Length: 366
Image 1 (cartoon, rainbow, N blue to C red):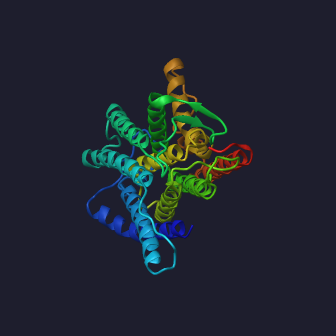
Image 2 (image 1 turned 60 degrees about the horizontal axis):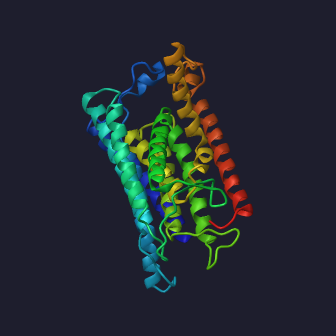
Image 3 (image 1 turned 90 degrees about the vertical axis):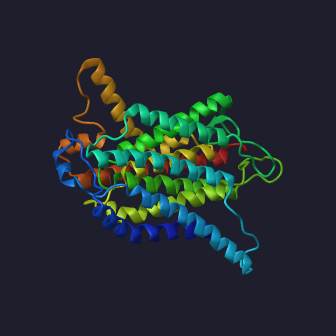
């Protein structure tokens, strides 16, 4: 638990004090946000606000994780703790997913800034890139082994082994693709109001901190029993990364809240979505993610519904999609929308953690 707190605190400090430096550097280079022409008119004043702040979130997360492990190593050398550990394969794989999707988002942001337009990569190119990243992640995840040489199970569970659907290798890869693509695009769609995606991500990441740590502390010892988890050994690292990312987002939120002085851009939204997806897959809580990330799901569904209904009837269900812009056009203030959506996000996280704990009480070893 000590290393988790260290990682989150270091990431928070780097983010909250490093963001002003990033704002100045991005402003100096003219790296500003482009605004969609058909969006709410109130957003036009945001044009030119520094973007690509996701680079700082990614960097703070990685540094916080690394310093936490270094602190453990030093404490071990000083005799404060009995053992130290290096980064697990699962942790490196999760960070790799985050960085890869962040790189994709960076390319998208760069095209927007370079060509001074609100659209970056075309949809087909982005989906192909997400496919390659997701399949690579799935393939490597299938090769992960715990200290007993056991590879991950190709199952779909809610939220653990008390209910599981066998998928097979092909089914598992398809599942990973769907989750990674859906989660990264969902955070991207939510990132439309100052602080909305950042604050929501903090809540979801903290929930995965608790889930990863809980699985680590309730590992099955020897034979599997009721109320325990068969773990690979990377759950503590997953919790550490989740809390480091939460700390980075929390510090960034200081500057990203209304009126935002910097945006995370696709660099941040795609990387955070990928990180959340990876946490769900590696902790085997894929279906639970639907509840934990309920706000992201609702906002994504609003876009799907809007597009589907318009294609069928040429009529719109919402004034504008994603959903947050519908309420803007209905006359709600930006801060009001963000706070109320945060409340909805908090309800989803609380419900998801409640389901997770309930399943722990009644479920079998996973």
